[in-house]
Amino acid sequence: MVDINLIDEQHFSTIEFTKLDWDVEVNGVPYQIVRAKGYAHCIGGHLDWGEGNEFWAYPLNEPMTFENLIEFDGVPGATWGLEYSPTNYIKTKWGETEIRSGRKLLITRNGKPFCDEWMTFHQAIAYIKDGILDDHPLDLNNRDFDKKCIGRKVWWRSEPAVITDYVQGQACVMIAPDGIPQFTLPNEFKDDDIFSYDEPEIKVSIFDDHIYWFR
Image (tube, rainbow, N blue to C red; front, side):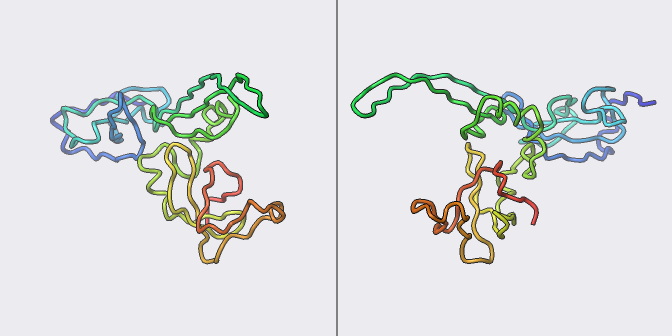
């Protein structure tokens, strides 16, 4: 039977806290999430891992104190959102001008632009609802995932590659050949005069099926 066991000031200095990398923000303020083994502030819910909810939080830019430590029962990581904005635009072609309809579809992370690649509304919902973002190998819910991925060795179309940079707002990475002069041009592009792999690195969506993340 799990019992509620709140943290008190008398025992605060003796508690062993485990820090988590969850990138949690509240009203734009980043918080550090910690787990205090044996100190459950509630029972049940998505953060009850069998021993009650033992997760607590304090502002990331402050040292942890008894006064600023609060109970945490929020989203265990970044908050993902979707912005959909229908638009009208003017297009002129072959001497004719017309008004057309368009749309802006944007996945947000902690309220900031994360991915603006072309996708349908249902695809964007699937990214969020089906756990594609939560389960991504780059640990997208964690703080500084974009910095930690730089230097990661991957396979690109079965050839060795390394991530050299992360492109903010586009959910893309820059990858370069690793140990080979350049990437091999895929057969489907060999007759295409425009497409080439002559550049020292290429930009690729982190959702591209041709990236294998474990090398």
